[in-house]
Image (cartoon, rainbow, N blue to C red):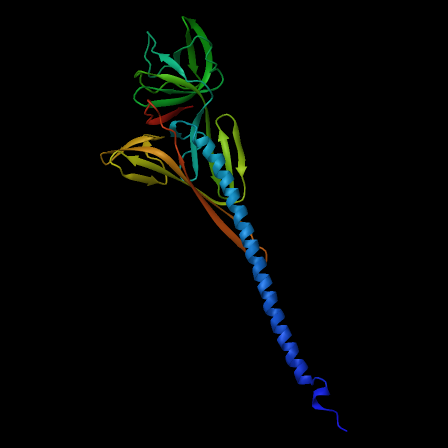
Length: 289
């Protein structure tokens, strides 16, 4: 008797068809797994980059939110789209500056401050602000008592350039700033007399925009600060409108490798409000170095 058709084995054609179907399904599954892993790697890299940029932004924000009267300067770095400098108060509410009875105030190599105790300015830096918002930042050479709670504060290597317009106060400060080195992708923090140290690596971009509010309700966003002579202006008149610098907009970018080849780049934008000057409407800071 002949064996029935049902009892026969698979033919070569049937085996090849089954194998082709299996290979196709395996390829589709494998491609799906690879794509899923790539998406996971992309998400992890993106999350890591955003966290990194957010931490850097917090470092910059912490200092800028403490800038004295919200003023921007040109020391230790020239303030522009890739760098910004400002002063940080080193403690206290400042000291009243008394006009000397003899000699002029503008061009003087020393000023007098009123304090019950030694103001502790010697060897550091001071910021002196007058009643119309003009200020100067200078290194302090020596401090000596001249009696009656008055102290003679010597400007080191320069002379005073602002007028005596009451009230005039002097503050112990540190002149600091941030500067981006595009060649190395490094963000540096520096200070006058203290050198410069990196605070972040691996950035592909760092850009600062200076945000001004106008008295007419308008907003001015600039790649560099408005100028008062050779100094960045916190308050300036443009086209008959008075503008006040109120914030800095910082945009940072960085990239990271993604599994399977290639890279991903992400950006982080933060608008950092500058502190208000209170009853002192600071206009600009002249560096006396």
